[in-house]
Length: 128
Ligand code: TYC
Image (cartoon, rainbow, N blue to C red; front, side, top):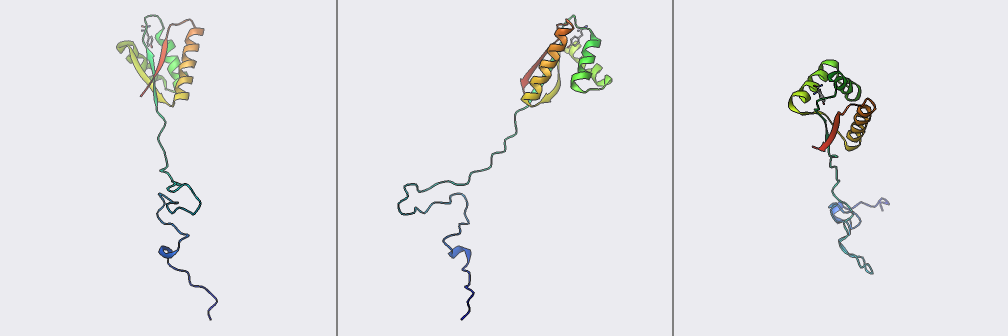
């Protein structure tokens, strides 16, 4: 006799469940739970993003704003000058989009830097 047991097809094996949504639909005697969901949809929601904005005012020197944009937002001089002019003309501009923590850090850094230099420059953030 062949000592190797033949393995039944998966569909005939009570220990193998190939429909993963509900893995415990057959109540075991003595168990009170019946339909226990053991697998759930993977949740991969992206974190929300926040716009960081600079606001115009009549007193902060243009060169100071350009310096802020270079220093805290990694812009080159031409990009920084262009965004500064947009803020100056339009009243505000988005200077970057970041995760909550990074946006909050940028706002704090800019506000502290402006205050230390006694300029009224305002920087805010808003959920995208
Ligand atoms: N309006 C300022 C001035 O004329 C310049 C300025 C630009 C100030 C951008 C703030 O976010 C700002 N000196």
